[in-house]
Image (cartoon, rainbow, N blue to C red; front, side, top):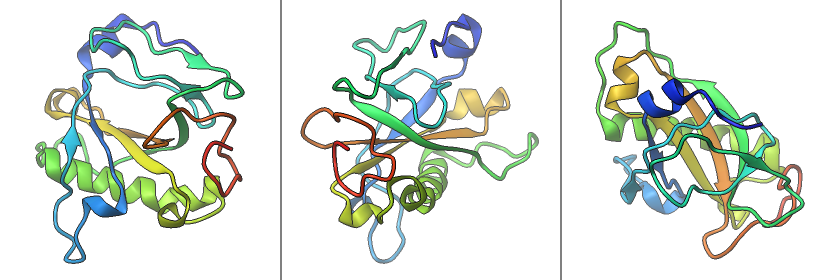
Length: 160
């Protein structure tokens, strides 16, 4: 799949949150270590892809999972917030996205995230995308120290 809708990619910016169990405290506080990459994903569950070299992208192509790649989509979902809800802030959206992705992780990989050696990377709407009505989250998985090789679906281990 190749994202080519310039209007959707250019107008709907997303916040990328690196979400691991280390990002939240036992007290359920807001995640730390947030980073932003201004591009929007429109990939399907099971698609593998590489992070764009530049934030000024017009497309994010899927790549074959059998080749080394940065990320794999393991879930997508919509945040539970109506169109009339004011943007709750980056940290609140990141927390909701991270929690939703973590809940869906084991169904795809076959083991809990904290025992997998994999990182959960939610792509969630930023303030501009939220104002344009975007509520979708794309949940991706990656390794902290290198590319994935093969799909992680049902793998229970890094790199497939």
